Length: 389
Image (cartoon, rainbow, N blue to C red; front, side, top):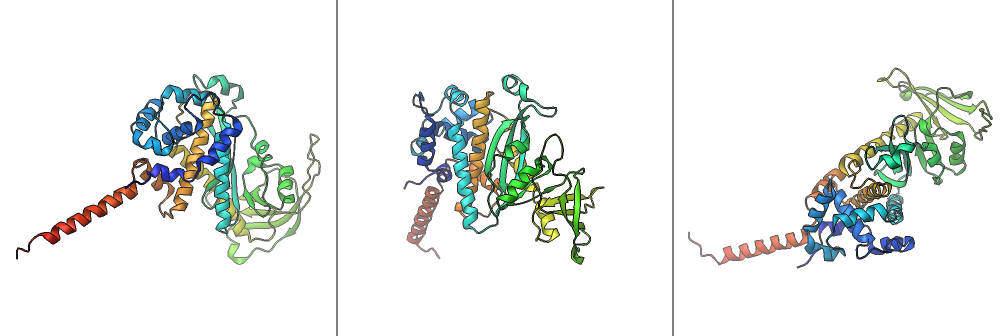
């Protein structure tokens, strides 16, 4: 009896045809010489899922399972060939595949009828030393030398639904302007995205947002709202405000003229309160405060993916190789999330990954069939034994 391995089950979330279309579009298989982008993707995903820390361990681990290669549509790899592909081959198929999987995850959320609550933030990857300095030193900042990964994450899963990679010195708000807001969605972000023009863009698109005012924001209070008794300990102030200045300075223009929600939230563990801004004028203050608190989930997401997938130790030092490895980490995460959803697993994503990590090439259906056959043979054997007493 033949059945597919767990790795093949995982890859069901990414049809071969969908990936090949992106490869053909980018002409990425040109001069591939038998080692195509699909082979490269499978090898890099194996590195992510197995925890391979070097090209040598990746080559040894992947090639030890040659009897499974045919069913995956790949072959044994050589680390020099993989290194050359990562350094020279187009990033576009991997980038577009990550976008395609993010679209699948986003559609799943809509089918489930969940509210679109999105968390926006970026994280830095430190890239220093031989091989990295040639392309990261020119864009280093006071705190970081390397690159930034910008993500929009759905708060309910959490699952990334948009991504971008930039140099370390690119401002977060510059990348946020590339994001196409969804009407009816709620975006939560921190003070790094304080740009009134972008807030105005979100509002005009019918999206809501929750963020923080800067301490020096010039505001005009239009209305003090009554604080409900059950919110009195948490909510110190609830007002409707507008900006005082249409021209903040340096020839800048502030297009945001609509009223905004101004909330002062107590933080017993800190010496200062939290000042929130939102264009949601109807929700209770404690609900808006909780939505901003939910922003911590994206920090946990960054921590999870750095700890459990391979974006701290890199298999190549070129910019191209680093980007491909980061993208395959995102693809691996999305495939894990879709696999967990498809099989209705109640275990955490870390538990799912831990189980897959030690059984990537096992065939659970075959093992179950063999166990059933063994039990049947044992039952038949015991039935034929004479009764002694």
